[in-house]
Picture 1 (spheres, one colour):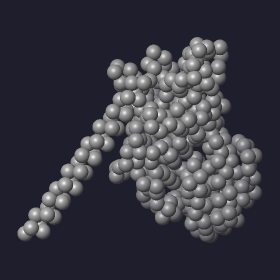
Picture 2 (cartoon, helix red, strand yellow):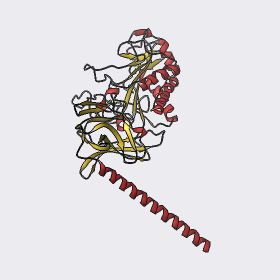
Picture 3 (tube, helix red, strand yellow):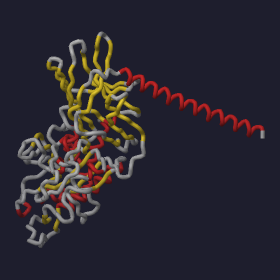
Picture 4 (cartoon, one colour):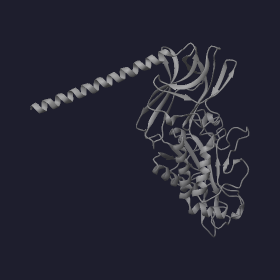
Length: 424
């Protein structure tokens, strides 16, 4: 009995110690946070005029004024204990400063690299050998956004919020560990076309399908089916690497809307995916399988860093046992293409444009009943999207390679994505 009482007493003291420790650390954190926020100079401030989350990156544009007694402005994420300098492109026009965190829509603040804790986005300047911080005020029409990190590295939620301290606005990043919600994904794959839209229909021997879309002397193939086969293989590859993946359709016969609820252009945003890959196969519409055009085409949004696109090209050609496209139209470099609408800025393909929201100039707002409404056309919280034309299925030789090696193409895409994210 005496030993039991001693054991209970020991446990009681341990629990009391842990309680005091937790309370002490909490009080220290709150005191430190309040102390740091109280040191910020709220008489100076700048304006955020634009911001968006595209893929794993967050970007800001802004402006502020400084008189000559302040110098060496730096953009930082800080909480008083830890500080990280944020790269920016800044211009000084006689004390009138303008800045942006990247010239590319898929660069900027890498949200995957933020540690647990709360941080504030501030401008740090020097005055009389003293460092002074001032906040940035939201001058956009957009409010708070939440980001979920990639699942193969553990899960964190980052709430990017416009907080208040004693009536002053300050931009905060609240980072915490979480269990990922069931309806949140890392990557969305859109198998082009669907059960109601076959895309291109071809014959294995190069003959021409009849009016009913059937081949008289060889196997008939629908682009929509081939797209799904590679997409399903890609999903399996990515899941084996630890990523959480969503297909826009779950079978060859499924149909999906373009816009609206969980459509081919909206599922990535609805599931807070970081990336969207639309998989297609090309054609020239030359009858009889005699097209000489062949090869891989990776389409990207304008103002994009091409690092991931380059990896996609090198890995798909290697594991798919294929080559880059022979087509020159819209080409920016071997295997990489950018096709724009008539304005020369907005991506032509909705799989890139609409998924990208304001970063890529999405515009289907429901005013044209032919298309329906994209609920994310005006979003600043979107997925980074690529459209991949894996080859020309009206080229008989290339069709054979595609049919024989869907897992090779899928592995190439998956390895490119994984390599890119591990480098980031």
